[in-house]
Amino acid sequence: MKKLFSLFMLLALLTGVLSVFAQTDDEMFIIEDDGFDSEFFEFDDEFEDDFGDVIDEEEDEWDLDSLVAYDYKHITVGNPTPLDGKFFTDLFGNDTSDADVRRLVAGYNLVTWNFEKSYFHFDNSVVSNVIVTMDEDENRNYMIILYNDLYFSDGTPINAYSYAFSALLQSSPLMRDLGVEPAIFDYLVGYEDYAEGKTPYLAGVKIIKDNILLLTVKGESLPYFYELDRLAFYPYPIHKIAPGCAVYDDGQGAYIGNENSAATEPIFTGDLLKQTILDEKTGYLSLPTPGSGPYDIISYDGTNAVFEINPYYKGNEQGKKPRINMLTYHGADRESMIGDLSEGKYALLNKVTYSPEILEGLQLTVTQPQFTRATYPRIGLTYVYFNPLSKNVQTQAVRQAIAYGFDRDSLIQSYAGNFGLRMDCLTGIGHWPMDLQCCFRYHGLSCAGS
Image 1: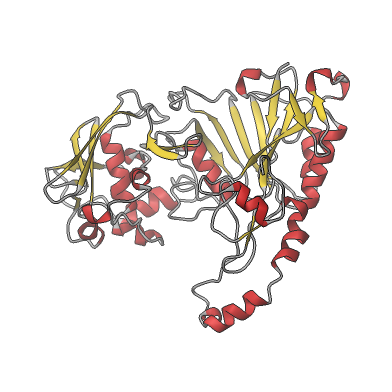
Image 2: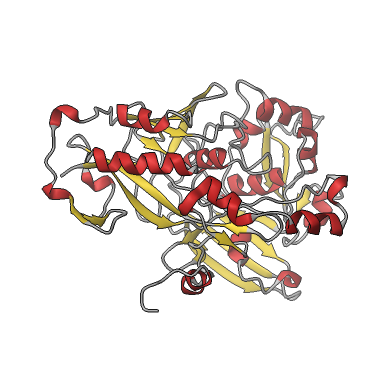
């Protein structure tokens, strides 16, 4: 049987004040139909419904006239969290829907996370080899050798200069001209001098050859458990973001200069970046193309974003490539989105968090066998915190009074119902350090083997 997933992500809600949190699993609601290739997703032929009954999907009788028709070459994704249009790095914000877009259009990160074994490692589809050495100052050098078959979505090659530009741009003091604080890469040698404008180059980022990048981590920053995550750079297109500029390395470290050596005035300025990044119609912040991910964004109107497959994307380290030709990311109305899903307006609903919506979605899977779900623990969390810029909560006694008067369990129950758990730690139940048995026992729940 050929099947299509329609993702209906349940709440991973962590609410409360200070260290007061709640957490649930995420869920996926699936659409099944003969119009989609089953190789796109894999799941078991049997699953348990909420009442513990085992359902054999292959024994369901299908009323073909009642099935919802979908265009499997162009599906619409609904999300009750609207897009904010900040799709270029998290320096401008990290809205959950914007983060989803970044995962679509940005790829070939030097480092990736292994979900099965819970550790960071260099992406084997990007990095062909790494040589790690220590210098006389006990700094750690990572000589990263890149594959030569990496391209942006317009066919421009991705190389060591693309990653060096990424580090230089994000940590440049010019980012303040765009209204954001530069990225803090204080673990890289020479960062402070570069960030303060004392040197035009970043000594901890060097280019050995077109496909060889050298990153140097300060000895004083070692050891660090998530060390490789500090080297998690995406490549960015200098010809789009800083046209007329190029990355150079004269031996002291990488820097950005004029592409035309005859030009007397520097082209890489705050005014240039305001135009190329912040322009409402063409700026890379809201229209990050060319990109390096599985999809290329082709339009964004302030509400909806449309994507098409990046023809130059070679796949991730498992060799997986996208197979749905086009996607439309659409803001979903909370009151009607489950009905819209059932009528074919959406093929996928993402991050549904309110208990009545979840129950309505579950009911849909019972009444219409075309829809079903899969459950998995969420890594992230949601929480309420005190605004550090508010003068009213700067006094510890005030914060404690609010915390003591805050009924955490009632708030969680009123919003998430039985789909939320209170957490007293900054992690979701899907995060690898979390001991699920301890968590379940703490909440009075049973778990297998206990």
